[in-house]
Length: 273
Image 1 (cartoon, one colour):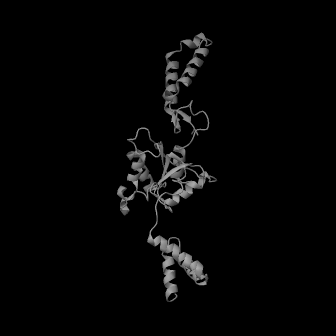
Image 2 (tube, helix red, strand yellow):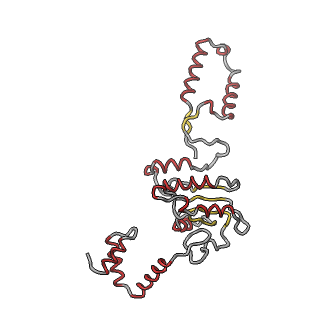
Image 3 (cartoon, one colour):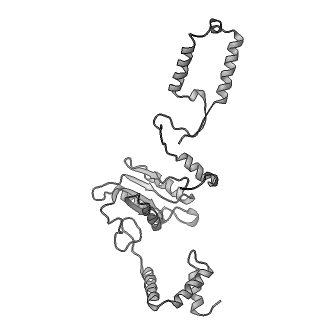
């Protein structure tokens, strides 16, 4: 334990997220050994945050002017809007270099237990943006990029329900699944289940119906497969022996029992990508 301003500084650093007692102590003594100009710049930056931070009037992220650099960029696609929870999520998506649209920051996620409802978020601003036109261009798609947790999924479901009355608007959700370089044996049940339900087709997706895997009964077979089975029986029937054409009651009952057993077992269908 130290005395005076040094201990007060350590205590204040320790209140920051991700800063433990040892890290707070190192930061405090680092400032003691730093030049006065660096300390003054830090003090000015903290004072500017205290005086007030400017938020973009369009998307709601932290900005240096009325509009952020993304909303002011004419090369961005105004018909595509990605909805995120916090401004830090924008930087994560921008690092992918795959998204060229605009953003909308909600300022959090729905959390009724902690008193965060729709009125505490920028949901009304999102609805206004959808109903308005930006330089003559209407929003064509909303990508909901909330966190894949309980509050994020609840927020995604709530937004999808609010945006449903817009008939020409496409509402999508970021896919959840296995990370690159991961092993299946270390994936939890929820992540692996989400990866299965959100899988993408590599080939033959238009010809085959969508199935989640499991057992396919003979009465669920495709018409083409049923037709091939009938044609196969028709081809083999002329070559059948006359004695087998009119089988006795025992043979017919045996065939019926075999077909019922086969129907009860079903045909195993593997998972398709």
